[in-house]
Length: 454
Image (cartoon, rainbow, N blue to C red; front, side, top):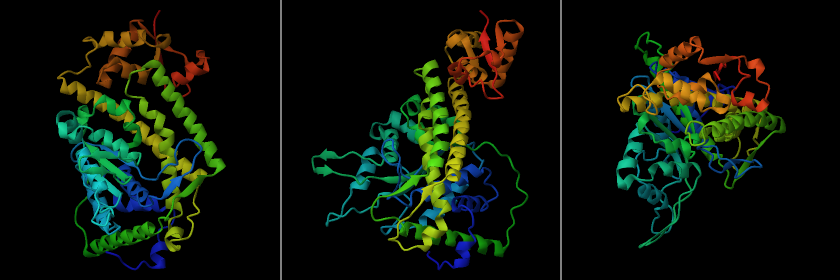
């Protein structure tokens, strides 16, 4: 589906190509309600096209540009539609003679065999690069727990993120898979969140993903008619993106090439990293064996990877014009890093909302409106404060630790305890210990802090 790309077509994509690609996917169908989904589709696609590009840092291994996403949305909110549009783009792109679209269902054995399969000349049959789209990923979680041949598939997602599949000694010989380079998008409905095991959050798999809460827009359609001209424009736009992205595939270096972070951008990242680490430390201090804070340890890494994709998008027009053997010469700027942090923060907020939805799904599954460590929700709030550091929590922490799934019910109980004098609202100005202020997020304007009356 390759077409000749005119200079005017390239120049039409001013600004960051990543933003434009996301916007073009969004405008394809008025039933797409959440721009975060289309940005995730665009970013995941762009991120998997340069497998030999890494972001150089002083900590750990250089970071790749590929990404993983998890969509949570009720049936009818339009998560499948951007999937379908992304699939059309992927099917038009090829690498090593194969489509970038990878199988969406697999066993651990099958996936490793897929990337290890060789022809009679010892050449690998399938490329190690592509995108995996799983429209109902909760089924994978459920089957991984109950079907022996599917055990380990969730852990395999972490190996895909780390570009590392194990070498296995078989009766027929040694199986050596290619190191995979994969972007990944999975989606499910809130009602199925209970199928995701706590260990997914505790062991770090959740922290490898950008989370999108799709239930955030109820925009109504204003009609469905479309002109023949509009259809032609949409098809041309699709073909143009395929041609542009195929040119980016051509620019993939033959050997590993690095993107470097400018010193000013490094300072922006360090400030964000320190804040994310403080939140992780708070979670570890207050709920050592909890599952709703572990992912924060990876937020800073996710911001760098997103900044790298923004850097490629910013330089996109130049890159696709250049010869394939020319160095990329791409650096992460303050603008790139700031945008990367903004998206990562949005992911963090989404996941906080999804955690609440997951509690509700678990409670519903147990045919109960509240979690089981106490049958009395009024006692649950008091016990949560009693067990907290200094018998003090902010409202978000208290809601989480109370185990109450319905926020309105929690608020009613909290107000009752305050009126009865059992719980006190703390004046944030009286908290002078810096670590305690950080633990309670006392510097946030909207934060309210509560203490059990001694």
